[in-house]
Every structure is written in structure tokens, then in C-alpha cells.
Image 1: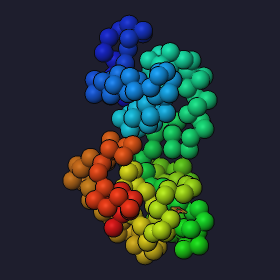
Image 2 (image 1 turned 90 degrees about the vertical axis):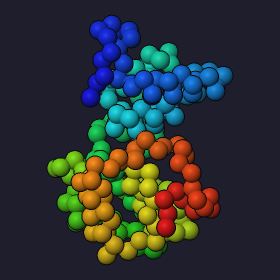
Image 3 (image 1 turned 180 degrees about the vertical axis):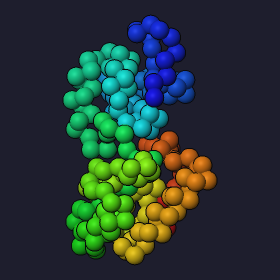
Image 4 (image 1 turned 90 degrees about the horizontal axis):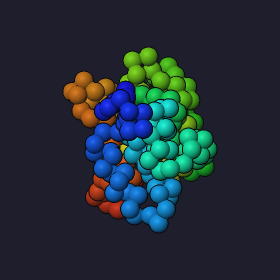
Length: 197
Ligand code: FES
């Protein structure tokens, strides 16, 4: 996982050159470097897959704060992970709008099809599952998000087809789309969530 570019612990990096450049540009946008912490953690998570000890150490070093400071902030945000997720991380919203439109049946179907529960990862590492709070697609409830792709107005019987779609993508070697975070992908209809039908 780590990308050691040299043997000096002060400059060893797990960031790709692209991510390092992104970070360098990001910190210039804020009056203090620390303000770039959360977006930086999201970008790093997209690239590495989770907030490993090495990622946390590097972010702390680059921002000039302690690793404990980074962990304290990161632990507040449910979208930040300290363990690897599956290639496709399925987040099922069970907040009020989705709950009223069958989110728990939907979630149960994902559990059954995948054989895992909340925060679980399938043995092949392809899928992970999370029950989450509102993902901002209430008007099209019940909704889920797979990495950065939305699926809305779902029914449990649609779950096998959705999973097969991602299995097919994986077989074809398609990217998992983790890298499109923080709104970097244009939405054709800005009134609907990214990726919604
Ligand atoms: S309540 Fe589910 S998307 Fe808002």
C-alpha cells in the first residue's frame, strides 16, 4: 500500500505525485493549512482506500499538526474510514425519508445478498456495506450511494441487478470511481444527486 519514494522518514510519502500536488494547491486556498484537513483526508482516502496509519502520519506532517489531532477530527466524520472498505462501498440511507419508503427492507436485502452486515466487507473484497444517515437524495428515496454513484427510488428486488452491474464493472477492469470525490464530476441535472437516474 505504501509508496515509499525515499528512505528519509521526514519525506517518505504514501501520496502519489498527483495527490501531493493536489494537496499543495489545496492548502493555498485557506488562510491556515489546518482548514484543508478534512478535504485532504477525503482525497487521501479516495486514493489509498482508507486512512491508514501512514496516511494519517503524512497528513499530520504536511499540515503541521499531530497525528492525534488528525485522528480526533477524522473520527468525527462517518464518511472517513480507518479500515479498508470494499472496492464498491455501498451506503444505504435509513434516515427518515428513506425509512418511510422502505429503506430497512432495502438494507436487509443487501445484507442477505452480500452475506455481511454494517461495516462488513465481502471475502473477495469487492463490496462493503454501511447503513448511513441522509445522503441528500430525500426526494428520490429510498436512495443508496456506491462510492460516488447514486441509485434512487430503489426496491429490494432491484438489489441483485445493481450488484451484478458492479461485478461486471470489476470483471471488465473499470475504475471503482473512488477518485471522483468532492463534487469533481459534473451533474447533468444539478437538481438531482450525482449519478441518479
Ligand atoms: S433521508 Fe435518505 S437521502 Fe435523505
